[in-house]
Length: 150
Image 1 (cartoon, rainbow, N blue to C red):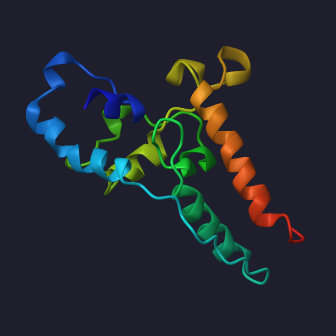
Image 2 (cartoon, helix red, strand yellow; image 1 turned 90 degrees about the vertical axis):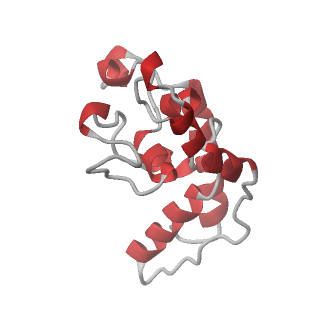
Image 3 (tube, rainbow, N blue to C red; image 1 turned 135 degrees about the horizontal axis):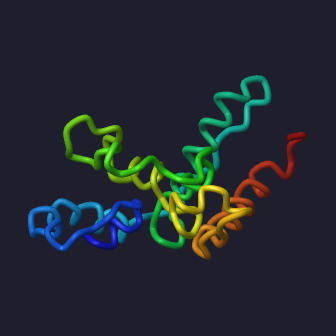
């Protein structure tokens, strides 16, 4: 439970750790342990780039990052996730994410220091795990688009 909360950039207090909450993440842990990387790359349709790019992002999300997050967290626009107090976790009222994977994609930590380092150029650097994941993404995208005009 604590590992998952940290991966999702959520604060953890001792009182938050309960057996019930930990058991809710057993299926997520088992799914990640049995994970298989995608076999077939997406089809590149040069006449429909929006659809192609959606499929590419979904395909990249089929790969696991260093911390077990879906790699598509590295393709999101925001470096720093929303403050967790205004962004309920999976299973809470008014939730924004239907699955733990969606939560990890939206909230996976990219820069060291969280909100305080919202400008990594001025306040901090990228996490080592993100740098590794970004390199993996680059390799996959290079392989995917190497024989195209993209």
